[in-house]
Image (cartoon, rainbow, N blue to C red; front, side, top):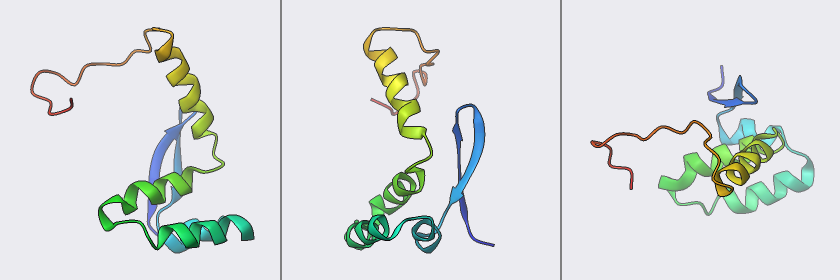
Length: 90
């Protein structure tokens, strides 16, 4: 069984391919060529994030994020919660 990445898109839990080969297998030929050119140059510490970015391509997650960021830019309360005083998040 291949590894998977899990995330929530549109309020639903979604499993995405979690290996380089499995992500690549979901792509059309031209997109796979771009993936191959890029992924081999990604520094190891950034590889998980880049693999997730490519796995999310075409899932609608980008559009969902854009809507959320637009709402935040307008100053809407989107239900975000502070991580608290002990958090290292800046």
